[in-house]
Image (cartoon, rainbow, N blue to C red):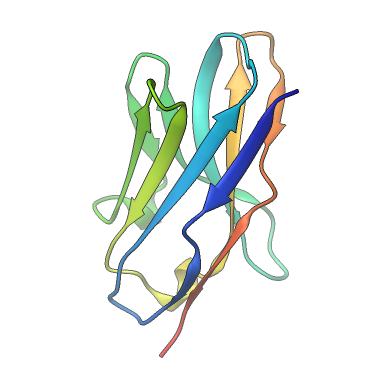
Length: 116
């Protein structure tokens, strides 16, 4: 059984930093990408960052230069380093793995609240 467990969320002041981590257990087979999504109240869930199996990365424009996605294959984790946080970054952040069989795996999410 595949499980994704996020950690690292919390309350941070504008301009601050947080590091989210996602531990992946179980076999996801070969993955196509590991991703971070977020969903703010009243808004649709949106892709924030993606790291492909090749190591290439993708970011939405609003987080470019501030967020960095990385993975540790040995530990089977994917992380999201977030800096220069803004109130509009506040959301529940979800870890996602999309494998080569077109199967999605999701974590339960971790809350990030950027507020003074």
